[in-house]
View 1: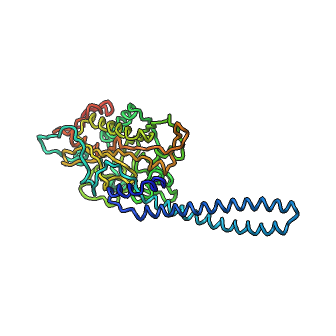
View 2: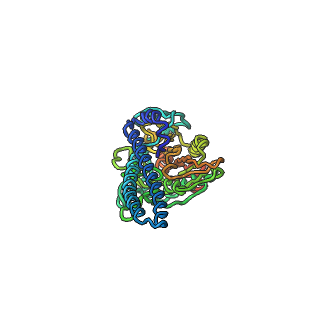
View 3: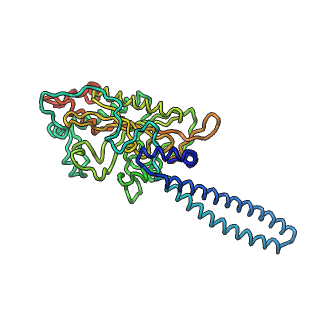
Length: 423
């Protein structure tokens, strides 16, 4: 959530940067600033009334002591009117603040200056490409056929149990999934990320804290009776550990990782791009989180990008790094780098990670602050990234490592799988 002083001081810059998102927000921004003037005016009136009421109370006490009950009672009538006025102003102030916060919740983060203009993923900027393309001297099969042939994943029984988008992993497919999770967690630990096992459901305050609510309310599974939400990513519960916390500057950087299942309704998803593991309602992911000093957050972002490059290099996957355009940028992000791996059998790129610097956007909602060396309270910066999301990694590994008589396991994973080939 954007801060009011920041909006006031940078109105024109924010309006200009929002054009990167193809967002026209002049009316909303000006309404927020007008409401803030009303808030300050109402608060000042309340403060004046309180001061006047305190002054009258002192006079009333002195009059009673002097035996001037009639004069004291007259002043008491004035204090009664002041109390009624103050109650009305308090209600008005609450209404102004509620209207203002609702408008603030509508505004996304301000894109970084290097974020390119664009309308969709077609306008994202390809920054680099790594690895060699796979070649086959036979007809390569897509992962859903390989999964069926070798008994790795049963999509049909998942439909029977829960519905489309809930696959059942079997045998070596389940072991490969578990191997990837453990590999990603170990690599995160080696990079200094402390492991967290968080809840898989969060309350409404947590959803608002990290920006999933109200923006992605329709994409989250809601447990109505308990008013809880199934998490769309471990970013939500892990970052909320620090909600309403004041850190010390010496606490930075805070680096956390966590494996969780993730749940997304993905309403409106259909067609060939969602077949097999390409888009699921439930999937596994290892997330990395950093909470940093504002002056260090872009250095932290670079380190997170390098960490994910290292994972993909070790898995031997062909991948590319993209800088998302404003039209494809997530609601909370100031800047996002996407990683895509190449699926040789599907002949297309598959997104496997997004790494974002959210700057103070979540911290302002979370009241996640720190005390600087001068003793002043500031908002921290938060960052998050997939390291990695498993479904499309699994799809690419199966497709790109297939041979005529099976599927080879990358060398880095063999200590985890305890087998080097699926056949």
